[in-house]
Length: 429
Image 1: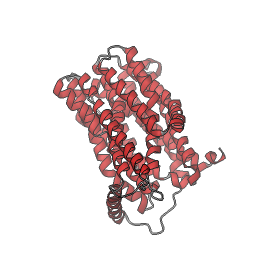
Image 2 (image 1 turned 180 degrees about the horizontal axis):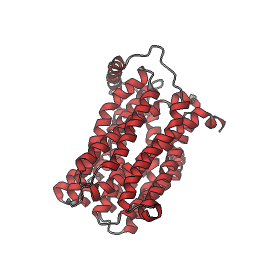
Image 3 (image 1 turned 135 degrees about the vertical axis):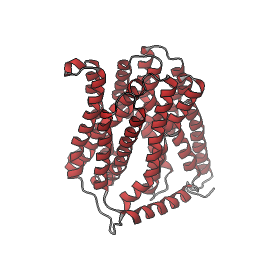
Image 4 (image 1 turned 60 degrees about the horizontal axis):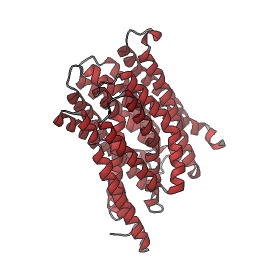
């Protein structure tokens, strides 16, 4: 506990408190609502769902393509704190820019949102890499958990305030709920900047022995990425798992980003949907700890399958959803497994990584995580557009969980077979 109170550790963890406001209030909460009811008002719900899915898919694609370059800069240039600052400024600028987007300007809303998302995820890349600079190897789990916990609390607190502003705008001297949402975008940007100050001031990175300029660092990063891919191809359980993870975590991310849009399409009041999202935020924190205990008791692979089964049932149930009470129940259920599937996936992946290659392989794992949430939103949007039904669109996510689960079973079977035959995990197939 004493190690968690060191100033660099607290400063680093506070950044999770800072940037979670964007993930909660903007990405999962108000942007989907405002996009459908303000920036694409008067448009068929299937068309607005398609546009929202396209916006989320485009943002994820750009981030995924940038991830290897950002990783190269972080590893080779020794300028992670400075590039973290640039990502923060870009993200906060894009977020505050949403305040200026007028009604009906959905193209500008998409552009500004993508800009903010690129800033958010690029800063996240550098933030993650600074963990090794503020903590000793034996402290990684505790310090990382501190960041996650502060993120849930910080993002939830500001989101709760923003939700109250939209429900009672007159109490804050605001004319309408729409004005409250627009003001919330400015508040998120200010919150993000304010609580980022400690990590920028008090966290110091260990510089590489021979830091490279940016362009040589990018070239070196691409070379290392190619070598990692060639090595991963020789690890059959790991290949199957990465394919499974890419699919089912895409489904998880898609539900987070599209749930509010789906509720709006069914005619539920936006206030109820936002409150449901807030419930999910606070349920997820203790549930993630519970799944960590469960994984220790029955193994991470079984815990992941339990979470996938819950997600599959929720997706099917969502197709028949027709009341606000059912939407609240769905929100609580998702909150029970959302944090757990992420933490157990990381621990199971760790069991597949060859000894001594943790940093290299977890870097690739994080890059795969950025690629997730490209297929899902586009799949939902295209299905809704082709069928004219947002219910069919949300049901299409089931494919990601079913196929991802099958690939995960294959990964586990290959791992057991390799262990039974006495082969090393990293043997060439």
